[in-house]
Image (cartoon, rainbow, N blue to C red):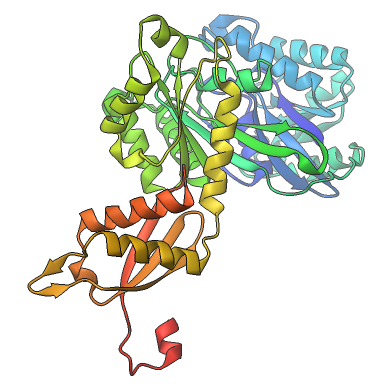
Length: 453
């Protein structure tokens, strides 16, 4: 796949242009230098090509421009994006004219040998187009555009498409497993992605809130038809609402993290093993449960907890007691620093994904429920006892079972939990949420077609 990167100095509108081309609000847009730090990517279809579009942080060579302590890391990520690109779009601010930083950025991109064009942004009307002409002095093709209004963007896309070579088609076009990594700030989400990739793909620091966007990164194990393909989504640390500032950046970061949960096939809840589950961890777990997503739990920094004398068996028991509503999720104790159990985390993700998509044979499903009903007497209310007739798997992802009974009002939560435990014991379903709905059996005289509905 061809890679097209948007680069430039801070606050020229790279993220706005990225969202415009992607036709979706992916990158955070805010009128403040240094909002974007990591490389934000999205697969995009343009005429004749499927490309990997990359948004980068503003390249600044003076921290007084953004007042961001992570300027150097942001610049490094942008440089790696240029190296990986087939073509770079250098985004400049036409209203401000040529700034010294523009000259420096253009010089460095040209020295890399990567083909490039200039997008002169903020030319909102035809009367502004003359401002773009000033950038022609660099000897590059210049496009007058307005990322905010979409003006001139299509012409830019067509020019980019014409300069790209036709990429070979992928052997396996199946959709990768989408894995969202969520948790509180500074539990090691970005370090985990970097450890899997064996590369500094995402900026890591001790500063809370280092990651702001939801960073998508392709990850593949193996090759050919048997390759396992993933899309890892690193998210911003989810803070308690009481500790969040009122800035749009914080609010949008939280929104993107919640959106990543909604869009994921599997959600990885990462916690600090040396601290154990906190109240905020419980809130995040609740969001995963509400979204009905397959889930696994990674207890990171186990090297620290192990040095303090903690034992896995006792830690799991304590965690299950604190997060009883996620008892179905597999738990892996790991360490990004030492690499302990990192491979097992992928196995846990695969297990959760397989459980969530499993098809349950109707005969086996009903036999399991029948055996469970014989072992424990069904509840009775006012002399009327619950009777279970049969069950059907309505859907997978999430696993949904509909059980036909004489009267749904007779069931108790304890008995429903008992049936769920029996189903999990028989089919596994590790990592998969299970929804059970009760429905009164239609009257015997009802038409069969009505019974199916």
